[in-house]
Length: 314
View (tube, rainbow, N blue to C red):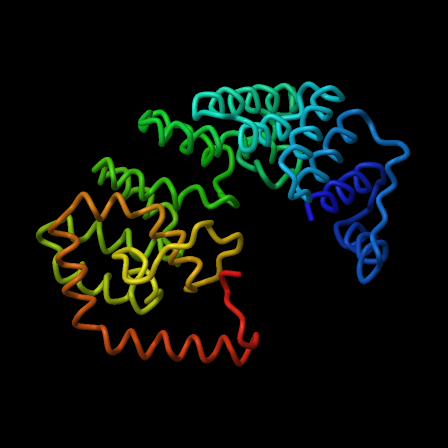
């Protein structure tokens, strides 16, 4: 998909259109319903390096992925995604991974050059900014896990300034981490900044925020009830009633089991560190158990009717 987006962006830069409608018509005529063949005969070294990264992403062989990434760096020393890939599959320790993600950030900035400032506020929307943003996400994650937690949060805040639309969903990670550090005012502000978000992270974070305000207990109860109705799978994974998978799901749907797995993985520490909040959550879940079981049964039935007897987690 990203390779196609790069090709479309390249095509659009090479032509002059009189209007947005004309550009859209060009894209539809060239790509809609047709087998896509990428012309790589005139590719630059930077483009050839990214082609190697696309091949690496398609590979299941770690040694092959490493080879592709190292070849990409030889073609383009500012190929940020090559460093990102090495951080994920070659690094032996968190510190090695952190160093490689840092190189990815530096390479991403150099690759963007003067355009870096022009893209601010619209990062990710331009495909050439994505390697840098992936490096930032990886860097933030490693910082968090080596207990450099304030630094991790600052990296995510910078990402949201670069891309307020937050296509990567970094706000979901950020709000949970702010709550873990008991930075409630910042978490509350972030919640309001993205008040239209209807994810599990937003529903359950809202409930947790209200619970932490003693005067808001009725609001907390209502918010938690709404959160469990939105995604009833969350308490099953959060409290060990259903075993977490070995690997995180690649795709997440609205209110589905994969979303619950993702939230539970992020928020396990949050709830484990607040015994009063856990007791409240467990008590609310017990009161609603029959209702939630019926809701899950209905959703599973609806899913089977739509997709057949297959698991969303596969």
